[in-house]
Length: 507
Image: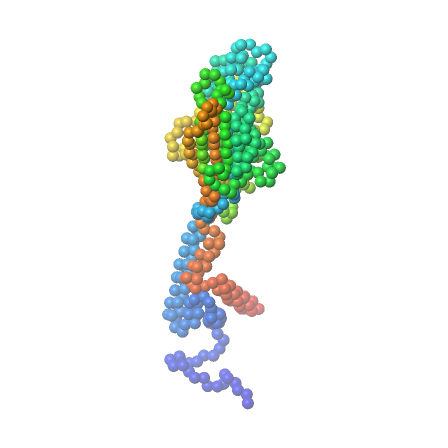
């Protein structure tokens, strides 16, 4: 028997009036499709929007869902703004990083006086024209007196030569002469007094001549000079590292503080400047004074500062530091590793070039193709000493009313670099009875076997943004990544059905 369902009697719901049979309208069809699609949706509230029986209930749930969505969007916009600010935060990564993870600092010995007066007569024969007259010899002597205590930061004494006839010294090779008159290793160090990591060394093999802002110094564990760079090629463990700490564990040496090398009548004691810097650093302004007849104990407390690779997307200006693979446009040197002190040294040399149109490679990183400053440039260097001795950085002019000339340098830090905090203890040196020599003992060592490592990174990364977005979506609309794909799938089906209906209508 065949049954035709449309011919059967259909029960009439109460208060519904006459029953009408026919094709559903387009709105009802799409609403029914949405109701079926969201009946088991993982997006909270959507099944109520299309599944509730009463219209006011559907409006209530729609208001709740829309309100939750708007609130979540506002919070996400605030989070997105915070992410766009690219704030940095510095955190202590560890306080127990072994000190052998970094290179032992370079140690420089720079005598207070730059002239070994025992070689002054031979220097006159070597660098002056033949048969110099008394006036030229006196001018040369005064020039050596000027160089005695001159560093690049104190070139104002060069104006003392303004009253002299400098014609006979115009061909003088300043750098060669200063390095010739500088103290040599065998003149400063007591034989067999150098020990590093409890191992005896020949002092003249540990310390090599190197140019600094103090002139030529004798430096240990550096890779600035050609001689020290050759060490690195032949020894894979150079620059040296150290795993121990405490007195007698680091570098020890004894200096000869004899007065026989000092000019007669000079009241200044034969002391030394102790420079402690990074192995790849040209120079540093931080110095310790070593006086005769003293024992000096310098405890080095290193700290490592690193910047996370997640800051690569930031500009160096906003990050305020440069990575090794980045180039500071103001750092016009291809031989030195970038750090703040090297940048300041190069910037100072550029200021000399702009002001006096010459270079001073005896004190500063050399500039290729530029003539060396001669005796005729002494007045220019002395007259503009206030420019060379004062550095202006950043936007300090917005905060400081400074009338000094100085020179401006844009030199942020290196993003990954060690810093050294040092403590110096000095005590009087005890000599054996009947001893006549004057000595300086020094030890440089790590204060602890471990150090602190600080890491700087973005406060909010893209991963943090994604995680917080997921938390906001889950909190306000109870959705997940699958819910988003589910919503897109429903929307795609709805658009496809609408496209088919439109196409059929056109036919």
